[in-house]
Image 1 (cartoon, chains in turn green, brown):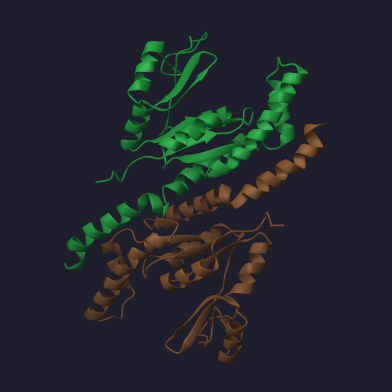
Image 2 (cartoon, rainbow over the protein chains, first blue to last red):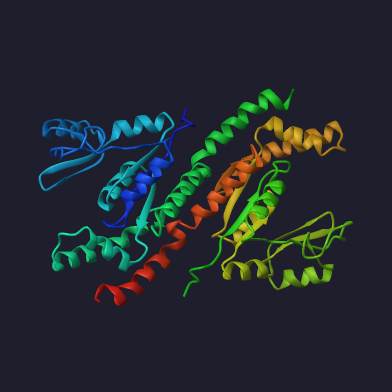
Amino acid sequence: MKNHNRGVLIVISGPSGAGKGTICKALLEKNPNLFISVSATTRKPRLGEEDGVNYYFLTKEEFLDRIASDDFLEFAEVYGNYYGTPKSTVEEMLEKGWDVILEIDIQGALRVKENAKDGVFIFILPPSMEELKQRIIKRGSETQESLMTRFKAAYQEINYVSKYNYAVVNDTVGEAVRKIESIIQAEKCRVDRIKEKILDSKEGLIHEQLYD
Amino acid sequence: MKNHNRGVLIVISGPSGAGKGTICKALLEKNPNLFISVSATTRKPRLGEEDGVNYYFLTKEEFLDRIASDDFLEFAEVYGNYYGTPKSTVEEMLEKGWDVILEIDIQGALRVKENAKDGVFIFILPPSMEELKQRIIKRGSETQESLMTRFKAAYQEINYVSKYNYAVVNDTVGEAVRKIESIIQAEKCRVDRIKEKILDSKEGLIHEQLYD
């Protein structure tokens, strides 16, 4: 029998500079009942990074073993380091009834979508293209040329919004968080998601109560 | 060009006795920015009923004229009286950007669905079959036999939940209202609904801002 109390996988994604990191942080602070999925990586920890908090730090051998046992919802190699989303942890928490948040870039989200059909895919949009540009500039240490390249890439990435279920404009973090909370609440009321639960509970009740 | 600020049609429906009337009343009191669609009928006003508030009271001739000019989202004849949902008012308010609430029985909702593909269909469920039974009993003035008939009908009607987008259990009115508010908010973030708006605004911005 299907687990009627299974949690919802919520994938929060969007172009670089749209503010998805800040939004996720605020969302989690406000909702301790949400579980954030921590990525695994083969890159070395940076100063202050903790294993199991920022990333699960794995050796390349460990990472390749996990790929072999199909234990990633998605993974990618970037500049010689592997990054991936551990499948078993996410699956375990969902089965326990936790809603799981996954913060991930667009390419990663599209790969997750292939393996998690019932996930909820939310695209974070910058308030405007001008604002996105300013955010990219503020990250600093970029030449004029690389800035323009990153800005054009972010602009192009916005086309991927059509692959997502929801889009949330990051006008203010508070407002974006409230919208994501509403999306999670609404998804828990979607008939596609809870039909069996409703019909099963109806069947259970008729025998006990209809003919008493 | 499509109206990017078009409101959302929210159809609130469910079996008799599930409490949809009470929920709609509370939802509207809390959200004066919602517009409730008033039905038209050919039956005579009852004591205290006002034209344009409880119903639009029409003569049979007026009603048939409106049917002829395709001015109902749905209509039905019940015991010799006509009841219908005026199409032009709903359409006008949606185009002005209002979210429109339609409270209607299941058969009516299914007819609306044929004419309003982008509507959001919410099914109100009683907290339990026992509770539904109690609510039907409380309405009083029914024989034991007719009670059982009504209860079985309500039980059968729950199967129609699969035709809806969302199901909200009426455990408490306050909680059900909050869930409906979340559904409305989430629907306004659905990519299917706002994709063109996002991509249009992106196009508008690139010329002004990308190359400045």
